[in-house]
Image (cartoon, rainbow, N blue to C red; front, side, top):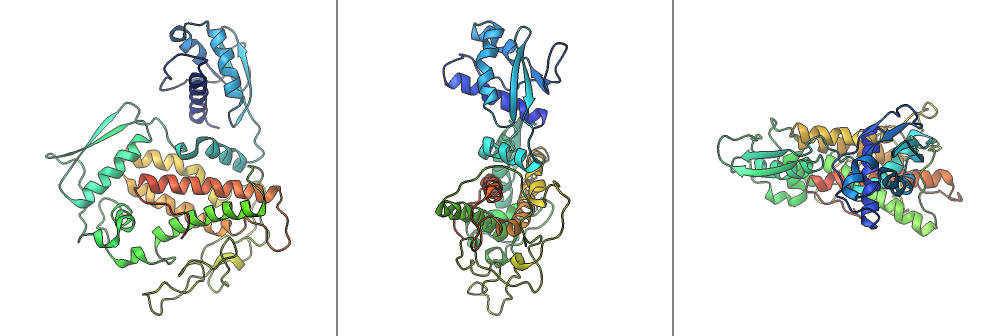
Length: 382
């Protein structure tokens, strides 16, 4: 857990204490966490109790005692010791792997994972021309900027401050989701393609890959429920025979996560109707796993861990295309992994399956959150 993440954790503990009526204060915008000073202990310390003492009308030591159990209950926190006049000294839990720590954090934050304070308190005016792409980009940026504590306001008039290259034609015939993607996926200086490619359920369509990965993640959760087991973050041992790439030429197709046929045109299924003679997608489910260094983060874990940085960059650089492209990176890393989540054949659900399921849930959370910021639906079934 980074200092920024721990700061948010401290604020969540304050919010819980306020919600439960133990403190009567306004939750501050930020909590300072630093290495412990003289007489302190643990990994980090915060003076939040001293900061809240006056508005709470209570001694700092009492405020610290109120906050301590709420902090201890937070994911990633091992212990909290109160020292001096009311400093909270925090020891982080020793996560068994980077995956465990990351998945626990995503579970704790939910759709708020990746949100930060890079633009806290800033009001950003997006002055755009009367153009459909400019309107769509500005609308997405308002949502993305809000994740970093800022507020975006869309205006019309001169001088224009946001002018992406206009679409060559009306994107409305693509439908709302594909139209959004067609306008947001290219960088602002690139001309968007308004073509039926955005509707095809094939590997060549990045939007399909992102939405399909989310649907597969949700299918894994439903399948686990039918098998009677739930998720639990933990070490993620390599899955025997797990694929390491989405596209392995010549690899055989495999059924979906629940044993049902794959979506049309996806992962080895026949091409979608209306695309005569289109080739099918090679599926990696039968490809051998590549050896990985013990304990090394997988490409999926790396992509999920990078999501907060990408989201902050999309907000600060006014570039929703960065978020769209990163969702494709997450999806491409997730699709091979999702085939390994559920037990196969006579396998019984184990700790490894529960850990994989937790990672699948975290993947679904990130993909759904990112698509929502782009104004695109994340379907449960596809």
